[in-house]
Amino acid sequence: MSTDTPSASADDAPSRAELQARIEDLEESLAEATDEDDAKKMSIIATKGTLDMAYPPLILASTAAAFGYDVTVFHTFWGLEILHEKRSKNLKLSSVGNPNMPVPNFVGALPGMDRVTTTMMERKIDNNDTATIEELVETSLDMGVEFQACQMTIDLMGYDEDEFYDGVRTGVGAATALQDMADADIQLLV
Image (tube, rainbow, N blue to C red; front, side):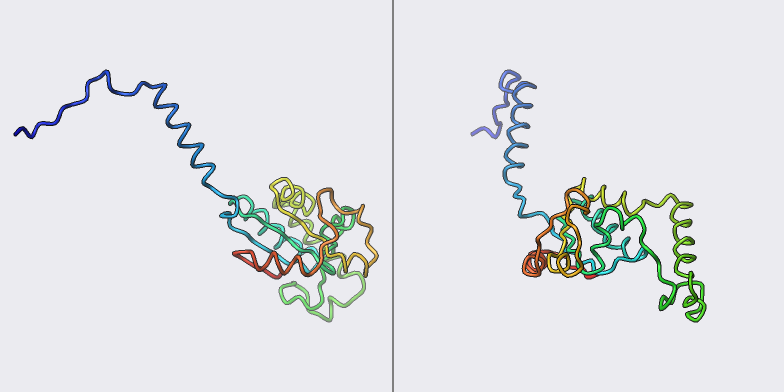
């Protein structure tokens, strides 16, 4: 009884073309096996429309999308200012009640101080080459982030839906936002 195993001849080895075809078949099978429902999901609720509070949901959404997350951001109440094409370019920074502002509240309450603190922040953004709100919204939309505008807030505040950025989904209610949160791996309230 021999322990030798017959060795495959060079003629039995697959050709480069056959190997390439096998690789392509395997990649196709893998792509079919990867279900979109397996993608991680993130749901963010944006409720504030000040300059400093517009950045967190936009940065988190665009970053998560870059990592392959399926991201929805539900904007309600003042958070709709972020989606308004014109108003998002003029968001303000309040100096009153913000413990991180370099001015005491009694000074921040003086007329014109919000304009001063907003200008200070806008200069920091510009000097540091930080993306603008408009750039972050457009980048996020390009990356597939779904921005949802709360229909109740649209009606309550009298927003004109045509003034939102192109690609913003309007007519969304709390039930849809709740379902998005229930289906998400990560839920954030900003």
